Amino acid sequence: MIKHTKLISWLIVGGVCAHLSCNSLNLNKPSSTDLSAIVPEIVHQQIDTVSIEIFTIRLAPHQNELVQELWREVDEQSLPPELRRELHTQGFRVGILRDLLSPALTQLLNNPSEDKSEVPPGHLQEFSMEDVVRETTVVRKPHNLFPDMRALIKVFDDQNVLPEFSLFRQENGMLHGQTYTQATGILCVSASINKDGSAQIQIVPELEYGTLERRIRTVAGVVVHETSRPRYAFETLTLSQRLLPGQWIIMGTTTMDSAGAGKAFFVRKVSTPEQRLLAIRLVQIRQN
Image 1 (cartoon, rainbow, N blue to C red):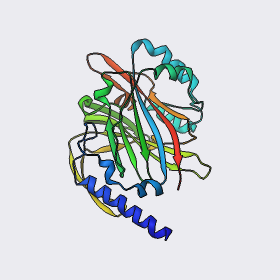
Image 2 (image 1 turned 180 degrees about the vertical axis):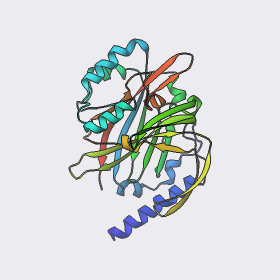
Image 3 (image 1 turned 30 degrees about the horizontal axis):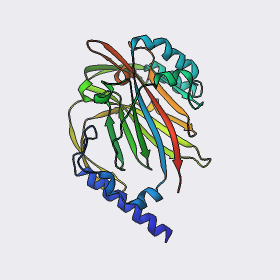
């Protein structure tokens, strides 16, 4: 009976994925339909869930010292040395905050704006906070991550793509370069539950570029049609971090003029240079 019930639950999830793939879904705009009502309560009850909060922080020039204080508060050494070097080379800076809330982060989060729009369960979630960030310093976005689901985080949305972005990388001891058009950085976030009650948060940086293409892929046995732009995944920069509820992952760039890919994710230089910071908090774990 238990196996049969779980099978029904996964079939329901698969049906939701198929439904969402057949509809153009723009999560940046309010929808007249409550899509969360499509998913029966049994799905929420029987699927393991990792709840996180994602804060996008727009940094003002006068906050530079406060940001440096935050980096002194977080633990950057918890990352494997080789990964830390790779991230730094590409202009990324990542640290773990094991305290509930540090003094510097408290100050940076003192003007939050909560995005209360609900995101329906599915294999793929994508959102951008650009419109709200223009009016506030901090935007908070809650997320529930189910098995085999990724949340796609764009710190800067498609209105702020880079017309051209040149990326250099080492391959087999040789330096290779490529220029991407209409590029923007995406952080692909997924989660799984560990046996000790913690969660394993995985983050893969990807560069989205070019024009829209129609693609077909299979999700949990369901054929999904989607329209998306090509992406280049930075596999060597994949972060897999164990967190307990209340702990944080802090992500940003080393410098605004770094030579690596980090500036495509966290920096824009238009009329006025702008830098942003990402803070991800593990809220709770629901295991069934």
